[in-house]
Image (tube, rainbow, N blue to C red):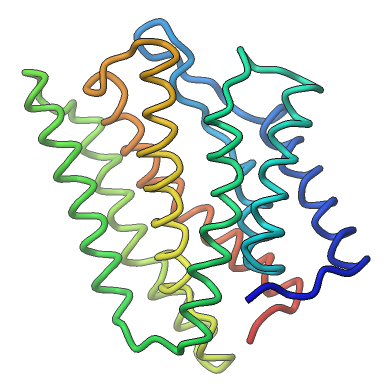
Length: 236
């Protein structure tokens, strides 16, 4: 499943690690929730995911772990917590596992339907969380939800149509599925748990806004990964 680790792979993974550190430490936006730095909007996970896709899950995991540890030493953005290192490693490991499994097995699953179900599930959980808190979803949040949902539907159609004459195994709808699964596990599940442990925040206070952010960033991250992966000529 893993490509052979040679000098070229190490150099490329090192470059992706450096890019991840820069994006995370210098170009991220912290959004305070309930007085804590509970939401970081960043694209530092993109190079880590690309590393997993290009070179396999082990190299991807090492890229994420190294980026987190070196980043903490260079520019700590709060107290060190090992859970975030685990999350960073999984951010490279999970795309490598799912990407290689999907394309090696030539899966016949309809990823457009699966992605639609993922959006509905995320929206439903977020809505129920808001209701449980006794609050209604703000109108501006509903607008962003709609934009995010449309991104899941429209962007894959546009990208697949644009590249329909190229390698059929490299499809945007499959890639957005990989990014969605990674985001759900690493960001919505694990990172949310770490924030609750660190800052004693309530699940209801932070989860809906994290879902809202994910619905918008997942399509954007997928477009960037799709284009950069093609640039690296990894299309099967």
